[in-house]
Length: 67
Image (cartoon, rainbow, N blue to C red):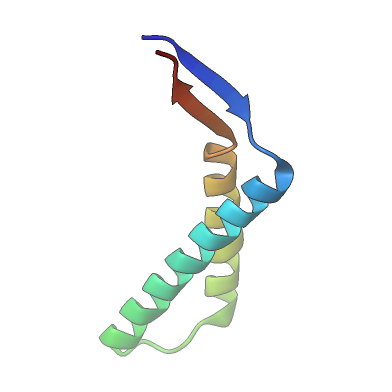
């Protein structure tokens, strides 16, 4: 079954990366709080940037099935 690949607009790519990065940082910060580790803002910031960028890059195309 063929697929249709469309490029998403830049605003959508950035929004997806922002949400994925934020969700990941919230989970990591919660896990660190649960383990009793100190708050590490630089680690969370760089995790947000790197993970958000990678997820935005991974979801830059919209793939739909053609019937």
